Image (cartoon, rainbow over all chains, first blue to last red):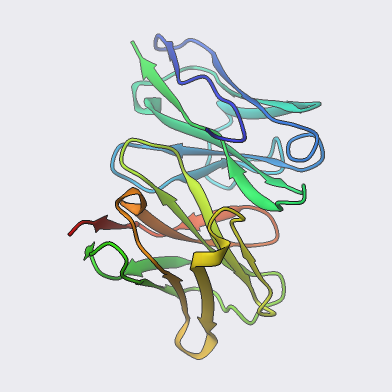
Length: 111
Length: 118
């Protein structure tokens, strides 16, 4: 069971806006940055969002991140078929068992 | 351009020790703030962080696997090596190495599949 909790699945139609949630605790999301990764089938994860809401160079502004308290969200607007992938949230957990933690992943289906 | 590539055995037997090498280019692991980490992903499952080594040789390990992991670096060869002892079939996974700058694991290798079976 993952430290960060994500819904296992999400879906939307082309052009729609979808959001994926990530729930944690005070020792991870509550006090540290949240990161989001996109993983296309058979490929390595790709960084989408860092420091809660910043996009690396080359990531379209259709992708946005936010954080409130011990939860975070990834929003994808103007959904495209190529957005169909697995999405993972991540954060540093500063508890006694200090470690990087990931969510269980959300499979996004574009209908 | 930063690139990383993992290498190692595809098949290991239970109880054996796994040794994986991450060979990178485009950055130096002697630059302040830089780190390289290992993350694995069992088939059809989520990502799991394993270990991290910083430019100053500071090392961090997953608490649940700490007793089995060792991470080292060879700055002159641009390599990071991860060893995992006492391999078990549940350790079957794709193992990724990734560059970590001041913030995120921003660039990942393609991953290498490791199967643990007798």
